[in-house]
Amino acid sequence: MGSITLQGVRKSFGAHDIIKGADLEIKDGSFVVFVGPSGCGKTTLLRMIAGLEDVTGGAIMIDGTNVVDVPPAKRGLSMVFQSYALYPHMSVRGNIAFGLKMAGLPKAEIDKKVEDAAAILNLTNYLERKPRELSGGQRQRVAIGRAIVREPKAFLFDEPLSNLDAALRVQMRLELTRLQRQLGTTAIYVTHDQVEAMTMADQIVVLSAGKIEQSGSPLDLYERPNNLFVAGFIGSPKMNFITGRLAEEKGAKTIGVRPEHLGVNKQGQGWVGSVAVAEHLGADTFLYVDVPEIGTLTARCSGEMAVKVGDSVGLVPDETRLHRFDSDGKAIR
Ligand code: ATP
Image (cartoon, rainbow, N blue to C red; front, side, top):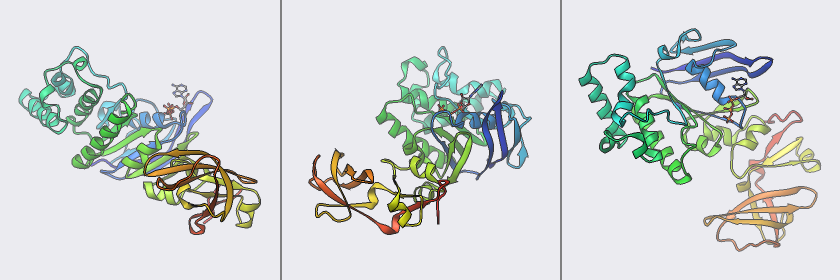
């Protein structure tokens, strides 16, 4: 089991309130991603769950028990760091086995657990190597192996892929999600990368300036953002925001429209502007269109559409997909 509940969790460093009352339910077996801009408090929140940081107020329940006074090693959680934190002088086997040895498990049992984890992680042929003889992705797997063998109630990941190059990151992202599904162990994963959040999470928790802005499934957040912050943070390229007369006509302070919900035409229908930048990605093209009195709008069209910088294009929003926000930035539903 590994359900985790936060109740009014707060953290201050001196006079600075870093986490301003977090309430959250994490279901057993789910993959939860904490996402938000640099400095919003993701790592601090994760470290409080791990017990590496004291809470200033509130409760952290693991399977129904408040653990705020329980030391990290007794919480039944395993943390995987960005830096991997492997012992350089130990073999892969030694690194993965370390925690089990410390716990005093019999050797035969340790060997079996280490070999099972190595098989899951494709490390069987590397067990006798030292960390320096491994690639970045393999080192990351060793760090994960060390977490798996402890059979924790939950894995806590702090930006574990950020030291890897882009291609390897995509591969490890897949491996990690597949592994988590296979083991069925609750995972909390911290990242500032909204694409990682969208692709890996069952539940995304968006934080900004120490507050949980919204928590929900990736599609929920994408289709029904609660406020301007979440609307602007989730989705790439970003949602377009339009204020002024056009928004007011639709009963809002701001209207939002995603790039894929702006139909591009060459007949001058809708909002007309000239193409300032065209990013050709192959299947899709992203157009940045300067529209007088509105500003620059981003539109996504098929890669097959022939458009170039300087062309005049019309943009027709899908009226059924508009997002409306009030003067506090709250979504109007
Ligand atoms: P990043 O993505 O950059 O790692 P983050 O969202 O994980 O950011 P945290 O590392 O949780 O952010 O930091 C949140 C805020 O708390 C920051 O403003 C940071 O400066 C502050 N902070 C973190 N640790 C301490 C500390 N030990 N003492 C004082 N302030 C701290």
